[in-house]
Image (tube, rainbow, N blue to C red; front, top):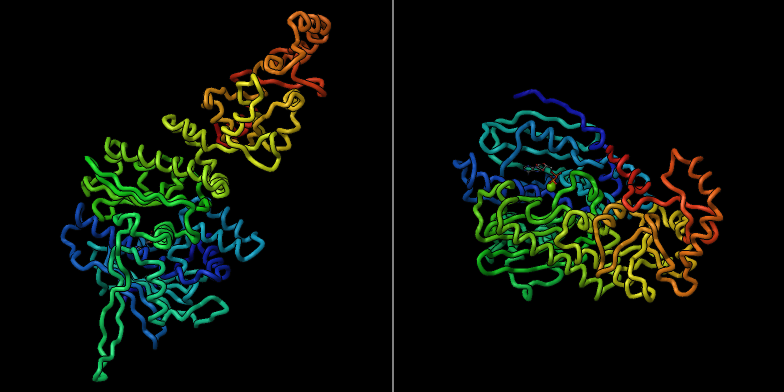
Amino acid sequence: PSSVETLEFQAETRQLLRLVIHSIYSNKDIFLRELISNASDALDKLRLESLTGSLAEVDTSDLHISLEVDRDARTLTVRDNGIGMTRDDLVELIGTIAKSGTAGLLEKIKDSKDAATAESLIGQFGVGFYSAFMVADKVAMRTRRAGTDSGTRWESDGEGSYTIQDDQDLPVGTSVTLHLKPADSEDGLADYLSESKIRQIVKRYSDFIRWPIRMASDRTDADGETTSELDTLNSMKALWARSRSEVTEDEYNEFYQQISHDWLPPAETIHMRAEGTFEYEALLFIPSQAPFDLYSRESKSGVQLYVKRVFIMDDCEALMPNYLRFVKGVVDAHDLSLNVSRELLQHDRQIQGVRRRLVKKVLAAVKDMQAKDAERYTKVWAQFGRALKEGLIEDTDNTEALLELVSAASTHDPEKTTTLRQYVERMKDGQDTIYYLTGETRAMVENSPHMEAFTAKGFEVLILTDPIDEVWVDQVPAFDGHRLQSIAKGQIDLDETADGEKETDAHRAQREEDLAALLTWLTTALSDHIKQVRVSSRLTTSAACIVGDAHDVTPTLEKMYRAMGQ
Ligand code: ADP
Ligand code: MG
C-alpha cells in the first residue's frame, strides 16, 4: 500500500467550503446535480477523445453514470466511466479555486446581511464539486484517468485538508462517495438514501443529461421473490431538437438551470432552427441575474457547441461575441466535423454566419422585451446593460440595434431611466442633438456648472455615470440621425435652438471687448493649465466652468485608463 499524503486546501477553498456548509439552507438537493454534471462532462470528454484523439483504444460502448445507495454504511456513490483524473489533476482541480474574483466574492458573502443574500451570491459562483459537503461530512473520490495504469484516492471532511493516495485496482473513471449527514428537515437535509428522493432530484435537475443515469431498484414479484434491476432515471432528451410546441416552459427552465447551474429561471428563452445549406438548432437563454465574474477578464462565453448531438465544447466563443458572454445555451450544428478546433471555428465562414444570426436574435429578443414587458427589460438592462454597451464599441454591425436597447438616467425624470428613442421623442422644436454629460455620480453630473444653461433653457440631458459610457458615446456617431454631444466639450451654441433672445454677433463682440482685460489676465495666470478663456452663454449662476476640447479625454475616462494601467 502506498503512503497517504495529507495536503491543505488553498485558503480560498477553505473559506468557500465553510460558507457552502454553513450558509446554504434551501438548495441542498443541488449537490446531486453538480456531481452528475461533472460525471456527464467526464463522459463527454472521454467520448470526444476516443473519436478524435489519442484514446482511440478505449471502450466507449457503455458510457453511463450510476448512483449507488448503501443504507448500512449511509453512503451515496455517484460513479462514471468517463475520462477520470490523474493525481495532479485532483490536487489542481479539486484542491484549489482558479476563478478570478473569488476573494472579492467571498468577502461580499461574509458581509451579506441575511442568509438569502449569501445563498444567492454563492449560487452565482457555482459551487460545483464542493456542494457535496453540504450533505456529507466525509467525501471520498476514487479516480483513474483513461490511458493511465493506476488510480488515486482522495478523501476529505471538508475542513482544512484532504488526503491523497495511490489506488491500484480502479477501473477507468471516477466515483464520488458521500458519507451522508443524518436527514434534518430544519437544516434542509432530506433523506438522500431514499430511492424516491433520488429519483425526484434526478428528474428535477438532471433529466436532460445525455448519458444514462442508472440506479438499482429492488422489485418484489407476485411470488414474493425480490430481484434487483437497473433503472434509467433520466429521459436523455435533447430538448433543442424538439419543436417549440412540444416543450413546456418548465422544461425550458429546468434545462436552463441544468446547463447554467443557475438557481433562478432565465429572463428569456430563444429557441430556433435553421434549415438549408447549414443546418443547426440553437437554444439560448438570457439569465435573470449576472454571474459575479461577468466583468472579470476570464469571464467566458456561455454557449456549448454540439455536432449532431455529440458534445464538442463549452464556452464556444466563436458562436457569440464577447459582449454577449452572458447568454447561455446550446448550438447543435449538423454539418461540422467532430474534430473542429476553436481555431478553425473562429475562421469558419458558416460559423460566422451562425454567429451573426444568433446575435441578431438575442438583440431582437431584448428589444421585444422592451416593447412588451418593460419591467423585465429594465431588470435585464440593469444586469447586462454594461455588457451590451461593450457591444457599441466591439460590434459596429449592430450599432443601430444596440442603441435601441440603451437605457440611461436623464434630467427628465429623477426616478426613471430613458431610452434614446424616448429622449428623441421629447426633444424640443428645432433641437437635433442628443445632449449628455458624463461623470462619476448622478449628483456630480447634476451639480456640474455645465448643466446650468441646459436646465435653465429646458433641454433634457442624459446623465451617464458608467465608466464605459465615456467610451461608447465617443464611438457612436449618431442615433436615428441625431448626433450625441457632450455638454462639457467643444462649443455649443444653445441659442441656435432656444427660442427668443438670440445673442447677436455684435452683442457678443461687445461683451468680449468689455471683458478683454479679464480674459487676458486669466489666460496668462492659468496658462499652465488651460488652452483658452472664452466668453460663454452657457452659464446662468456659476461664474466660470472648464470645458474640454471636442476630442479631449474626459476626467472620468482619464481615471479609467489610469486604473487599467494605461
Ligand atoms: P466545474 O465543473 O465547474 O469545473 P467542479 O467543482 O464541479 O467545477 O469540478 C472541478 C473540476 O474537477 C472539473 O472541471 C473536472 O475537471 C474535475 N472533475 C470533477 N468531477 C469529475 C469527474 N467525475 N470526472 C472527471 N473530472 C472531474
Ligand atoms: Mg461541475
